[in-house]
Image 1 (cartoon, rainbow, N blue to C red):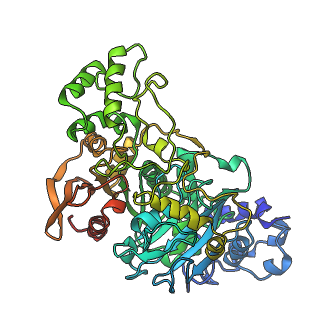
Image 2 (cartoon, rainbow, N blue to C red; image 1 turned 30 degrees about the vertical axis):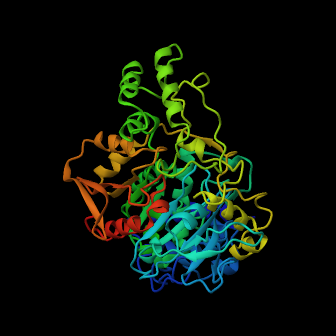
Image 3 (cartoon, rainbow, N blue to C red; image 1 turned 45 degrees about the vertical axis):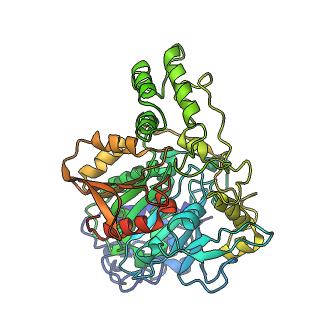
Length: 550
């Protein structure tokens, strides 16, 4: 019988923890083991230590029970739980013809019947002091490799036409890992290399996605799971930020809110640093989101005003739609023919405009968004942001920005690559950058209230928008931030990189910063801003994470 099935032992430990006078895990002499080297005197053999553990928990071997403190037994208990941490240090990668000049780790963390795959890159500056970032990518269902190779990590694909050989890499001079430790997570399960051992595990949604990521970091049931922070104890005192862009930006505040609520667990208990992380939450300092999905009210309804501001539709058409649709472009009544006519005219105006970046040329998409005509949908007829983040239907053309998605597909599907990354054979049938078959329930309508709650609690927040993205326009983001009714600390002003305006920012009370990443001489900020403006976004991130004004 598995050791975690011993309910009696767990009940005993709980009773010990409920004793306010018990100095449990108070001292730590080291941090090499699963729980560090517990002080043998933390729980002496007097009092609670004199319990006959053999009679209470017959499933624990007698050799373990004899002459053991509760702390030592807990270490055994953790070591024999059903999930085993599996990770590897990666020194080289196929496609990069040298040893990696940064520390990369890949591995799996189990949460119930789910196995989450992650990539962890240590800061190139000072890993022990630099912040720890958990990064979630686009989605729902988009692999972490998009964040790694297209946005903020040290490697990027050489954009050369595929010739049958494995795609190759160059170094990204503006990697955020120069100043931060970053975990890139394939989440939710069914994304990238993450998988479930049961069919039910693949059923997910906004709430479960957030809860699973929360448990990836630190699990409520200390006895049955090894969390990422517990298996990497040297990072438990680093400032932790949760981050993501696009649809993942909707999940980020839910995760931070869950961690915030978890801080009230066992408040009376005296714990060592590692136990504090396991039971009382994490050292979360704040969060950052880029062009984040928030809710249809703001995300989709802001598109019509955005098109007008960007001169994609005329003032007359905009005013007509505004009047006839009563500024509601999502839930449009089928009987409202004049509104539908205006929306159809708008759709024709923008039909050949690049979605992630309106200034870039239209290219065949690596995605096949479903058709959305006004006769078939009650909401605004343009394809929504998440519809554009689906599995590839055709390969993009060489010369288009999204050609890198084709290179990524070839690279990640290669057997030598998967072997180098430590992928468990047989756990996925095919690597897909964005999984359109994900069983996903968008069960959180809006996260505006989550942002307000976190702001009230004083968490730092950076919300940034590429200003030429029409999937999640900055207009909607600016609008919902205004709805929070926060005091303005530093009003709208430009921020600079190399003496040039890189965007505009506004700072609000309780540490919330909104920033745009603007159009430049060659290109502006698009849907995933670091992909379009890497230098400017790195400077923005570095200033903000260093608690400096943009």
